[in-house]
Length: 118
Image (cartoon, rainbow, N blue to C red; front, side, top):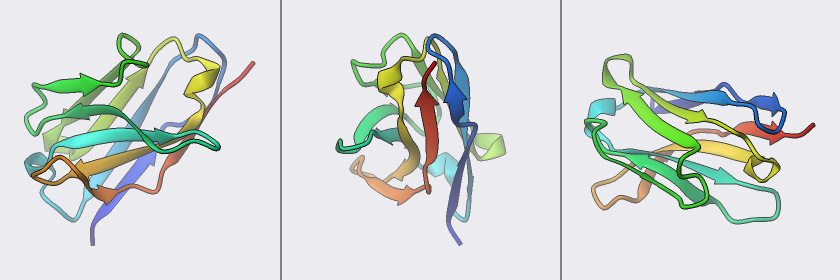
């Protein structure tokens, strides 16, 4: 059974930081490029960051460059998203996703809430 389980979200003050984790099981994690998406209230889901299978290539949305860092540890079947200098506009449900060979989401996690507020 394929599972992607996000953790590490919560309520954070502006300027704070946190690390999201995505624990994967049921498929060969090291064979899939991975991404983090987010969906804010009333907005469409947007791609935040992506990482290739080996973890050597990353891409970020312009809105998060310099503040977000995506990484992975294949031996632990886990994907990470470090978020620094959080802003209220980062408030959203954050999802991890495994990508197919065309770079499209193939598996999804259930999402984890990040709320940035004072």
